[in-house]
Amino acid sequence: MMTNQEVLSVYADMASLTEQMLAHAMRAEWDEMVELEQRCAVHVRTLQGQEDPRPMQGAERERKVELIRQMLTADRQIRDLAMPWMAQLSALINSTGTERRLVNAYGSV
Image (cartoon, rainbow, N blue to C red):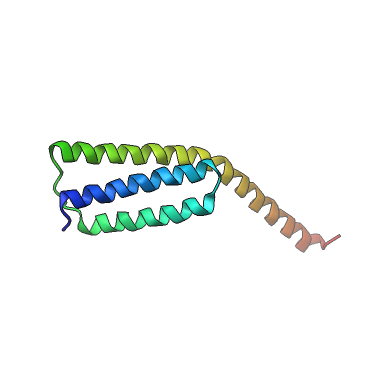
């Protein structure tokens, strides 16, 4: 079981990673963002297995809430940036699939 300070340290690392993810998303550096997202997922798994299920109290609880809010804000901003890119990617994939079906049906020109 992790101590509250260890838990807060992991949350702080995750908040830092999400801020870095946001910076990469703002520059459309999606591969770098995904790498950071994977590192963040490792922290989540660590917390799932070792965080004390009893709620924190006082200043520690306030700090944890603050860090979670930071992560949620960055996550929302990342999604706002990623949605247009994902829509473009989806359109490209769909048009490639349509093109492939047309070639299969009618042959290449």
